[in-house]
Amino acid sequence: MRKEKSIFLFGAMIVVSMLLAGCFQSASDGTVATSTNDQLGQILGAVASQEPVNTTAPTQDMQTGGDTIPSPEVATQVPTETPTPEPTIPPINVDKTVPKTYALHDGEFPWCIARRFNLNPVDLLNANGIPVGQSQFSAGLVLTIPNNIGPFEGNRALRGHTSPYNVKTGDTFYSVACYFGDLWPEEIAAANNMDMGDSLPAGTQLVIP
Image (cartoon, rainbow, N blue to C red; front, top):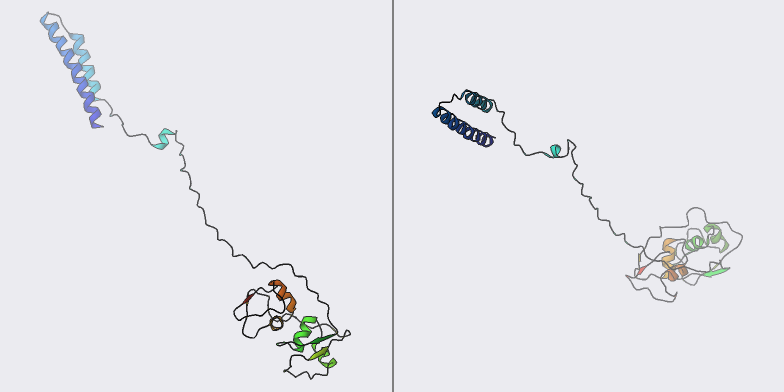
């Protein structure tokens, strides 16, 4: 601001010098320079009363007429997590016709058969002359399956059908079906594209339908 005022004063001094030169010339010619003196006084008065010039750089509000331009917002992209795919279970077509007799396999027992076939377990034991408190059963025991007994009371499933199931030493499709309660061994084999005669090494992971 001081720089601009100094330039203005310098310019005014040049004008005054020119006027003074004219005055001296008129005096040498014998002419009275009264009007010139008046003009000089007006110029000096204008210089003394001159307001400083505002040289502040225009702000954003001045450039836009007072309206503030909002800065653009940068969209934040949140990375999405890729869900873990669930095991694919092929269509299962298993014959679930309840037989008239059934021979127990390793790892099976009457209560397991009652859950699988949806039979009242006490009625099943009574129909085969087995004491209710008996807990040891041998593979090959043949059970008669009456068609006039009631359904299983309560939840037939012993456990949720969570996958995968890690095979333990000695497991078979029959014992795994009894582990879950309401499953048929044929369902488990079909869900894993296996045959009932296939072996199950320990550590094998089975899809549970």
